[in-house]
Image 1 (cartoon, one colour):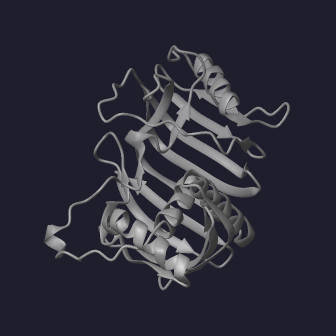
Image 2: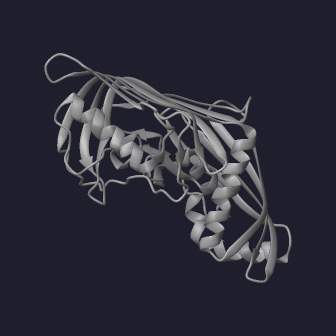
Length: 308
């Protein structure tokens, strides 16, 4: 959910009016979903990496318990043994859990070392729902014939990273009400870091086709003693090569204060316009996105397929 809301906030963050270079001049940025940098990772408890299926189950449960408020008595991790070193299945279900809004997910350095390799027949992470502040999100990540990698994040905390899979998918869904709540909370938190107070914010989304998302956000805020109203627009489209391009990112000042804010942030946010990001990347270098779609029939639903 953080990544989805982050995409919306990235579009809503500012008012780019940069020159649009020819396609050949545009380089690709960091992938939207980069497993090697922390997306799709599972925290582990303690300091040592697990060596047996039993240790793996206990370590996963401890890591999740440290980062989430889990329902009382819930068995959130199930690990099925396979033959020899193979694990048949790892299933994680954190339905009904709550995440601290201040929690920062694990991030991995590009040079992070792989300290353990765990072949797994089937991996599933499910939350239906998971609560962030007052918003509820439903999500599911699954992978068949997958490889989990034992790695340490920038704070030296152990985690399991999805290294790649024969096939898999990721789906996240927020209702219209939960989307508004998550968007408003995220915007207020970002505004607080800039000494700005967000009084009101409303987000509207449209999807001209399954791989395209257009947004408009109306914001009323105060920066110190200056009131401001502005409207932010943006568009993200995923092409047939599963590269996401951000266009039409604009900030429209609705009053004097809004125009002042647009002028302040324009130079910093010009890079957003025409930014191109690969949709997915995995450490094995072979697993790639195979499908992608938005569905706005009930809030927002984003579905991504991947495989080798």
